[in-house]
Length: 422
Image (cartoon, rainbow, N blue to C red; front, top):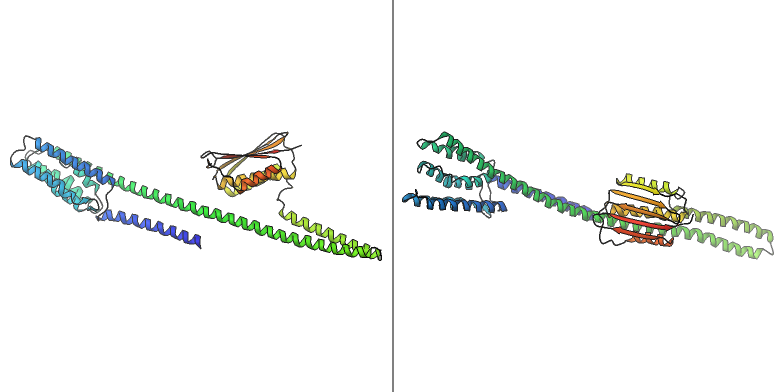
């Protein structure tokens, strides 16, 4: 129930995030107010700098005298302030801003071209900001107004050059395209940022869910072991208790019958021998149930079998290298090696997320050295858990040693040394 609730919460958050992205994109394309971004601040500063440069040019221009001087300065001030009213933090109108830019700055451009007969382009930077707000609803009238209508006013000027008009149209189109590219880049950047943020959140949720699964698996393992131990304890208790109780009671009877009725005592003793044999067979069957599977196989075949199964089930590449003269070992040494390999493989996959594991088994005259190395995540602060401590205790019982090395980003290596006598 807890896992289902958690997954439902994840799905709900993903849907909400998707809806918000769609609403944000829809708001921008429909001309509704939206919040400022860093590119808005940058373009506003560039636009303000551009109008400041125009003011300096008009003030220092010797041809601007009399009424024309004041008209241009006032018009420049209006062309800067009025469009900016529709482009403010928290109040951005994608429809009204280009209209204000066309009416104010575009009108100034027409005035300079027709009245003053000058080729000064005051629309250079404002066209970038107008292109920044192009969307499906306003693109055609923006293009037709800035690219065609404004440059064509040059035809009114006596002796106006068609080449100059065409050049002005191309320049305006280029500036609009530049602003539109900035908008598309900003949209792509926002989507990638949102996607990265959502991916990080999903990764964190997956890690938490994975940790929950690991904890659950550990709990199931502990419960299974406890249940199995309890079952074996009951089986051994019932078998051994019943057998020994029967034998003890029968031996008491034999003790009384041995002198007055030796034949009956002999028959009773034969029955007790059968009970003891059957009890011993039952105990052996119970012990064989908990004995490691595959202990009758040679060590090399046993290792090959468990590594092949591990590779097939997990997709991990496991390589085995054997050095020295292979010789048979006693069962305790053999099972210690097998258990060390199994625990190392499990740790490499569960904790290190390894993709490649290398097993080296070196047979020396005095000892056997087992090395398991992986290419997993590794860690600089390795804290041995239950598995590694059990491995160490198993090796110490055979007068062996365990060495563990791990470094973050470089995987881990476990070395087991077991002294043997041939």
